[in-house]
Amino acid sequence: MKLTVDTGKCSGHGRCYSLAPDYFDCDDEGFPIVLRPDLTAADVVAVGDAVANCPERAIAILEE
Ligand code: F3S
Image 1 (cartoon, rainbow, N blue to C red):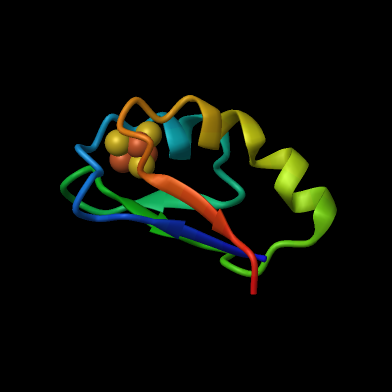
Image 2 (cartoon, rainbow, N blue to C red; image 1 turned 60 degrees about the horizontal axis):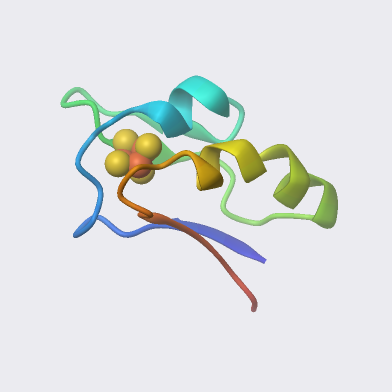
């Protein structure tokens, strides 16, 4: 599975890299950088809070 951020929806709230720093970093403007796009089933669980807490619903986990 693939971890993605829709840059058209993201407004830089920063919850993703605060809640899941193993999976997201931030750029100089506060927008996320996906560190680990390829997810195992355990990763999907680990990143779940970040996905659920994005106010813009900008984070998606896509089936490959
Ligand atoms: Fe953007 Fe959502 Fe993270 S708005 S910075 S993807 S919490």
